[in-house]
View 1 (cartoon, rainbow, N blue to C red):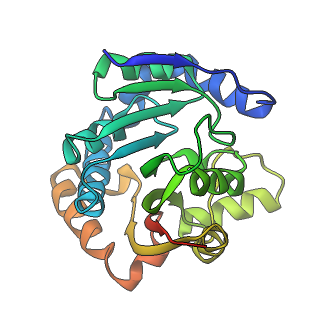
View 2 (view 1 turned 90 degrees about the vertical axis):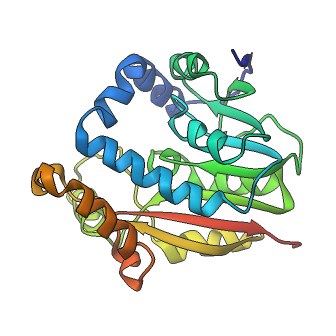
Length: 250
C-alpha cells in the first residue's frame, strides 16, 4: 500500500469544490466513466497512446498530476516498472481509491497550482483530465516547468477547442450556459508551454465519438481508426489531444 502524505495548501477556493465533487463519486468514478464497453475502449485507447509516447522515457521520478483513482498511474507503472511514481490529487476520497490499487509509491493530497515540491524534482510529469477542469491551467503549466528537470518530459492531455465538441462548448459559454468542461486551443497551449521552456515533441489526437453513434460490433474498428487518425493532420480536429513536451534550457 503506498504511503499517503497529507499536505495543506492555502487559497484552494473553487478548487476545493472540485475536490468535494469528485470525493462524492470517488467510489463509483471508474464505473461511471469507464464501466461500459465504450468506456473501456476509450480507456484502452488512452493506455495505448500513453504507452507509445512514454516508451522511451522509462525510469526516473514520475508525477501523475491530478491522479484521481490512478487509472493513468496504472498504465504508467506498466510502462515504467522501475520508476518512483508519485500521485497528487485534491480529492482525499479519490486518493483513497487510488491507494487500494497499489500502483504508486507515494500519494499526496495537494494543489496542482501550488505544487509542494522543489525545483527540478521530476523526470516526467503526466497530466490527464486535469487541464479540462475549471483550473488555472497556465499556472499549472508554470508549476510543471518549475518541478521538471531540464531534459524531462511533460505528457498532457487537453480538450481541443477546434473539435466539434470544443466549438459546441465555446458556443455554450457565449450563450452564458455554465460548463465545467474546458477546451484549449492547441497553439495557445503550446505558446504558453514554450514560454515556460516546454517544447513539443509529439502530438497525438483521439477522436472520441459519442457511444450512441458506434454500434457495439464496430467498437474495435472504431478504436483502430481513431488511433490511426490520431497520427495524421486530422488530429488537430480531434476531441482530445495528447501532447508530449520536453523541458529545455531557458
